[in-house]
Length: 144
Image 1 (cartoon, one colour):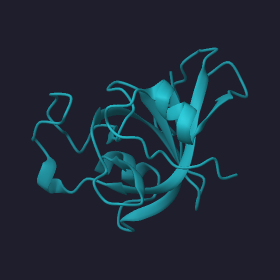
Image 2 (cartoon, rainbow, N blue to C red):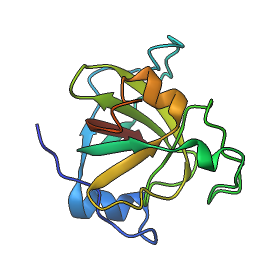
Image 3 (cartoon, rainbow, N blue to C red):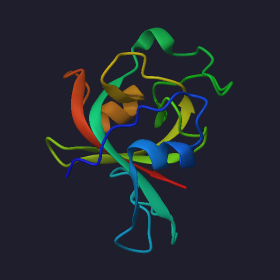
């Protein structure tokens, strides 16, 4: 199911982005998805922002540098960059080619390559089978 891509500028908030290019969908259950490595879930009755598109991952070049949120980037943490989602937003990233998924936290702005909707850390890329391939078609689900 193609629900659109997130193309809003960094100045838009999540509600404005949802209204223009993606959909808020109710979750299928009362628990948010968990990382396939941690097995933890977050209990919630909230809705999620859904989009599909290309994902890529950060290179080692950025390890230790400050992100847009002010945090130091660590390629071993499950973090990601998105153009407009608020910092701290939890996002499930699902690789549509193999079904693997991971939950990341938004800590930076990007991706800066046209046609991509999210950049994930190397740890997250390895988790979903993206590492080595460079890019993959993904579905992202951001929880408010």
